[in-house]
Length: 526
Ligand code: FAD
Ligand code: N01
Image: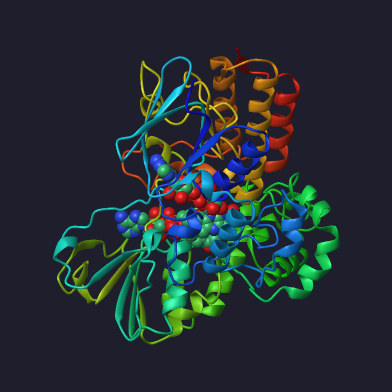
């Protein structure tokens, strides 16, 4: 007999909910977490300005109406401490901690034909019939090497593992490398307190305003119909509400109406901007119109036209990298103590004891902050030696991940992924996608038990069809045209394939629901 029915790896949004569901179903479950507290992303990423880019009313669990009714979100986009407090509250409310081992990292998984042996970094191992990897899509930091880093005399911090005791940046000369979401939030938050801020930008960023604000009234109005609101979001394109279904750009190119629609979305703020027209990710003209409107806004925000141009994204379609949601980012560059180094024209040559040498100029700094992103979607999984007796999952995925529905991979039975590659995951409100996967996996395990079955694995042909379908759908969009982390392009040597399923959350749900209803069509159960 295995030690546990199920071992879950990770105690973020996914692992916590997975534990609750399995416990409710009577499965003996053990959760292993590398950090020393629950929270996942919101435990590790404590950099100044960290907050969500999906509205808090939707970037939160929907599984328990009582939880929705009792938790008061203070802002439209909650900051990291509030989201971490929420996840800690969830852990306490459902008494989850007693089945979680913290400060323990899973290093190896071995399948022996009937069960998995899970080996952790303390040298111990335990067995389970099923393993669920709730390891996160953005939990393996990418830490590029810069020559001379060890010689730097000042302090170095990574946004993805910010010190828990905080960092005093007041009055310091600070350099930030990276202008994705983490970089933008950090830059905007620290600009008012540092004495000098030098930003090293490789690729300019499309950002839409957050228009963050208190939401007490909105929350009160929503509460009576919260369950319906959630039900609707499960069938949307990205797992959150964006108002009524938009029209196609090609059907309505009248310039004043197009402009009015972009302006309306801009004033609303947030990620719904790219849903102004429903073909922005599939029609290059629609995409260019949406991109040009953002470029125009950058020109309005940044006083120096030459600087505005350097901050303007032109080399990739809007939406093909995760959009940033900002709170005064571009305006920061109007401050005299803030400067921008374009490392496309002035590459970082090395870190020196006093700062960063880019092109021919040494930029002095007392602190360097690296906001260089993650080995997304496959990084945390590939960091574990997952072995089925013949080969590792890493070897199988060398040319890109292969999954059926993003949930399992053929040849690795009884191993499930929450928001795995080839599922909507990072293209969506992650909490919607997490809850959907956790519910799906829980139902599958209950089904196996009720039928006296003990093994589940994708049929290789079904998996191949799914991989081909996800790639084909991605190719119908502009998404593969950016060197993005969605494509694995930010990691040297990583195979460039589009990692998530771009067909939409609602469509995916209909497919995966159908697969389950049809007796887990495409899976082999025994
Ligand atoms: P995670 O929160 O990443 O948790 C995974 C956990 O697994 C981690 O705690 C990790 O320590 C643990 N783990 C991994 N490997 C091992 C191992 N081998 N052994 C033991 N433990 C392991 N998404 C949105 O939809 N909206 C947002 O606004 C949003 N904001 C974000 C902001 C930041 C700064 C980042 C980095 C991501 C953001 N995301 C957002 C994506 C975010 O990752 C998800 O929304 C969500 O938090 C993921 O939850 P998770 O539990 O699946 O993974
Ligand atoms: O990482 P990123 P992130 N030399 O990969 C640059 C979520 N998130 O942590 O664009 C110099 O987006 C890199 O340049 P380029 C969200 O899903 C959400 O910011 O590759 N520069 C880029 O500018 C997000 O998409 C929030 O040319 C280097 C930056 O570093 C995801 O997490 C907040 C470099 C990395 O940007 C990842 O965001 C934070 C190098 N060697 C995160 N390597 C919210 O707002 C990389 N760069 C909710």
